[in-house]
Length: 327
Image (cartoon, rainbow, N blue to C red):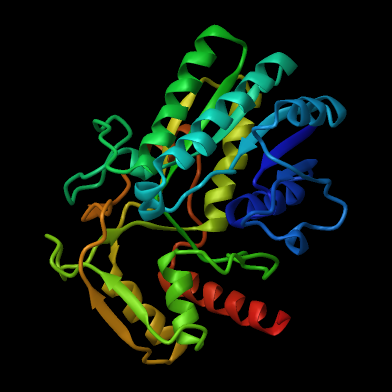
């Protein structure tokens, strides 16, 4: 049996493929390569280039590869972009997810792992946010992810499909073995963009908002290392295979770093004092969002292994250097 990884040529999906291979599983990738990169796919892993909203293609892949679990990473994920293109986000993240779920039900796929987001919470206080916090997303991106969580809940009531939805906080870093990292040139992740500035790939870094109600006025976020994150996905798959129930879980470390904290760490680790421009607030950015990560530890037995922020930044810098050397 195989695990279908949608978006498996991208950043988080690509790390999931590595983690599955390390665990002796058989991943199959479906990716349209809009942001994913073909060269990141490990040798021997099937890559089907196509859209996860293409019902005929998905049905064929599920049957031909005897898929018994889907790990769904493919999505549009840039908050500011979602504010100017809400229909594009609802089409890609919601309508196509509905098609994928229908294919899973028709094929009898029993297990589904969904890449959700902390953006479903919206604006919360400075205290860590738990899974039962009221949901009030402030962007079409966050709303689109919450809609898919609702679909999963409803589908699981009506059909023999069981799921785990994992709400990511801020994903960062790269594979500690140097096999993969954030490779999209258009990525907006803070640590990646700061690493590019430190290595001269950008002439400066913009910081959006310095008047938030946080200790230094910049946004506060919970950064989770990407390999730790995908380990949570593999643990979620094991949970479902054991007959475990449906779960919605935060994926974070339970501590926050401000944007200016991260800038300082990148400057320290790189040894480069790159230019930083302070800008006005950006629409759709909550002041602070940090995970209450107690539930994932209790439900899956998951514990972080790579939660040192300087190590996370060092991984990102090393990966950016490797990308540059590739030309």
